[in-house]
Length: 199
Image (cartoon, rainbow, N blue to C red; front, side):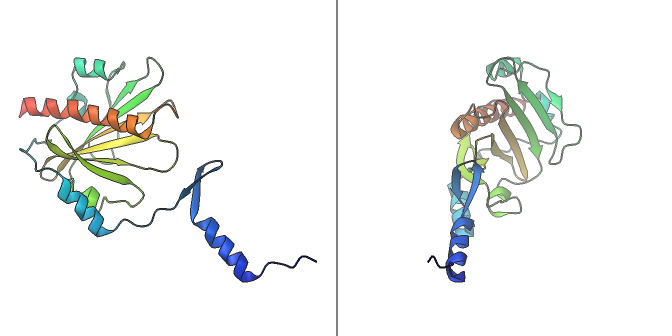
C-alpha cells in the first residue's frame, strides 16, 4: 500500500520548485540571489575615468544621429519623440524595412551613471557590466533570463548626466543578447561621437 507523503517531504519539494522560474515553456532559470553591494562597488571601480564632460543640457536626442548614422543602423523612418517620457527626453528610431526588425531608443537622463550600480536605479533583476564607449564610462544593462528582447547601454557623459541607448528586437527571437547589446553599443558610439563634435 502506498503511503501519503509526509508534510516535510511536501515542503522540501515546494522549496525545490520555488528555486526556479520559467520564462519559456520547459525552460527553467535559477532565481538569482541579490547582488551584493561589494560586487557592485567592484564594477564601479572598473569604469574608466571620464575624459571630459559632454553636457546633455538642451540636447534633443532625435538630433544625436545624422543621416549617415541612421543609414548604418538601417533606420528607415523619421525619428519621433516620445510624447510623455518617464525618464528624460526620449527619441525612437525604427529599423523595419527588412527582417529582422529593430527599434532604437535614445534618451538623456539627469542621473549619474553610478546610480545604476550602487544607487536608486540599481535593480537586482538586471545584469550590468562595465566597459567604455568612446573612452567614456559605460554599462550594459539587460535582463538575463528568458528570450532576449532588448539591451541598454548607459554612458556617463557628464557628472549627473547619462546618455541611454537601447536596442529592441521587434522581430522576437531574432537576436541573441550579445547581438542586441552590440547594436545598443554601436548606437551609443554614434551618439557620443556626435556629442563630441558639438562640445
